[in-house]
Amino acid sequence: MQNMTLQQVHELRKAQEDLNFTKSIYLEFYRKMAKHAFTTELNNLIRGDFNRVDVELHIPKLPPQITQEAYTPMLQVDKMVELYDAVNKSLL
View 1 (tube, one colour):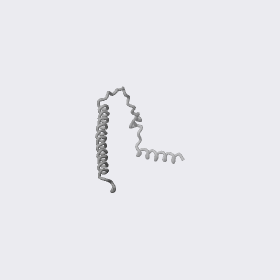
View 2: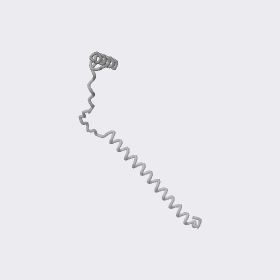
View 3: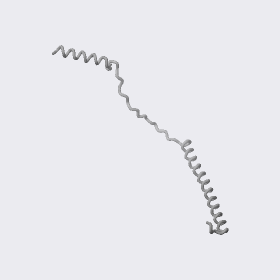
View 4: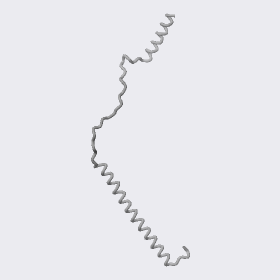
């Protein structure tokens, strides 16, 4: 760099300015193209024709509800165990 003539420095500066100009043009073009592509895709998603198909929801069936008669609280189970033990003792 130190051994360059004035003419070489001017040529280098012109090359750098051309490079910077080309980069700015490319970036501007790229931004416009990306914006256009994404805007188009978004508009297609928003305004697109949707084929509506009769859809049947597949909801898993719940197990049958336990009726009050079939439900035995733990307090009654303890009482049943006591009665069972009492009956077994009396039979022995």
